[in-house]
Image 1 (cartoon, helix red, strand yellow):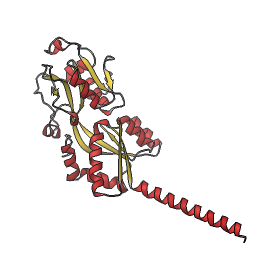
Image 2 (cartoon, rainbow, N blue to C red; image 1 turned 90 degrees about the vertical axis):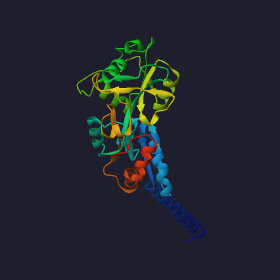
Image 3 (tube, rainbow, N blue to C red; image 1 turned 135 degrees about the horizontal axis):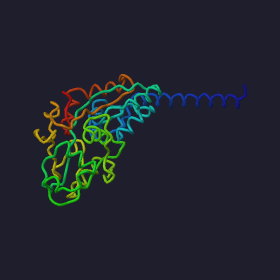
Image 4 (cartoon, rainbow, N blue to C red; image 1 turned 135 degrees about the vertical axis):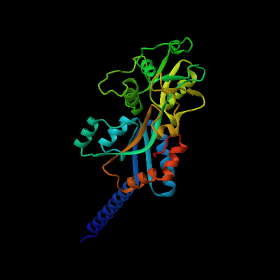
Amino acid sequence: MSNRILRSCVALATLLLLLASGCSRKSDSARNTVQIKGSDTMVNLSQAWAEQFMKTHPGTSIAVTGGGSGNGITSLISSTCDIAEVSREMKESEIALARQKGVEPTKNIVALDGLAVAINAANPVNQLTIAQLADIFTGKVKNWKELGGREGRIVLLSREVNSGTHVYFKEHVLRHGNAEAKDEFSPEALLLPSSQAIVDEVTQNTDAIGYFGMGYITPRLKVVKIAVDDKSPAYAPAIELIQKNIYPISRPLIMYTKGAPAGLTKTFMEFIRSPEGQEVVRKMDFVPVP
């Protein structure tokens, strides 16, 4: 064998070895990474879980991205994430599409949440019923004086349509849980990209009203007490009221996985449901799973 051929063979063998090494590292990296996408309500909570988990599991990576529950579900269906975090349950059509793609969504309740309805701190209104909320957000009631407040045209703030919070509020408040109802948000409602955007607008706009997960509550605004009807007591969201299903606008926060969790995803999910993980839930102002 000539020296030229020998050198070529050595070079080729070295290249193949490097490629194999690179593939191995990529495979190892994939096994040590969990991709989470979805709910903006849950994004700060999931980041807190990820930070705490990675402290005790060096060499692992938990990557969290928001974008809304719809985005998380789409990513799970297309297998571009390991976990879809959502603030609503998947629809039957979404589950059917996932199964067509070979993905079996598995539901994991990881925390509870109460939707806070917030107004500007200067607004004198203190409580509302579910029916009044529905009338406000469908546009039937347009002025605060109709609700015992002062003169002022109501400014409606909502999450965007791909938000699980938007879907939950529409189904359980605007439509009163009636699957046959067709009520929609008023076309005058401003659709904002995040819960924080709603918080910021309510804080500076005296006529605004919006809704978001209780983890975004701040002293800079007023949280309205909510009653089932005008004969029922009104409540603000609180941990014990949500765990007992007393607060009228409560919901589970869910992580969907592709089948039963396995590998690092399983280890991470076990951490979330552990006392340590549920303490993170409490510190982030959400509600631990009983």
